[in-house]
Image (cartoon, rainbow, N blue to C red; front, side):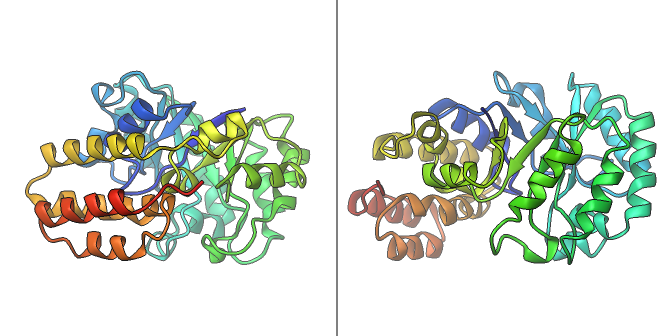
Length: 313
């Protein structure tokens, strides 16, 4: 089984990836938060710099519906030694999909087909795709698969939900199995969606053919030891000491590069939205963390959480 860390905008940055690899590991591929500008701003450049990704397998992700933009980004990325990029056709955010990007691109299949024809013809890099199964109706998936069949996709990562479902409701696992039957002999497939525990992976195996690859996002953010637990079929592999060291490395590295305390605190508060779910009765401490306006108050709130809360077993 291969495990991938899903890109989470603003959270799974190179600082998070390196700390995660240091303390937990077990990830076969890390995907960067999406790159959306052909000019590639400093934040986007930091995500792909080789010196920021030493010792880990990183795939840059691109979010665009413009051929020229995609090709300019891939040409730039290729200069840094990458061999593959990932096209984001899965982001369900309204601000993204309203511009027919991410999962929104699935709403105009003819335009998507033309776009894929152009980029597969001209890209200097191999292309994998992360996709939803449609916008409003699962019946859209059949037509989308027929488009994907035309192209030499390096890997197809399927989140079997519709765009309108965001991250709610149960994934349409039958849609993933339809892809196994329709595409599995020609395109490597990866499953993504709601793997948050050993039980959730066991339950997945009772409903679909065992995939060779699983992409996990929120499950790892909530419980950093998840990959080790999946590999060992155990849920007792997380300690306060390890999660504290993991947190401290992320905090120290953000504080060393951020301009002022507020940007670092913003990053850490986002992280704690997920990380707090590793602890029992953490709600009141999470509120204190969110209210912190400076490093001193933040450290007091975090220390209180580590002192008073236990790791969920």
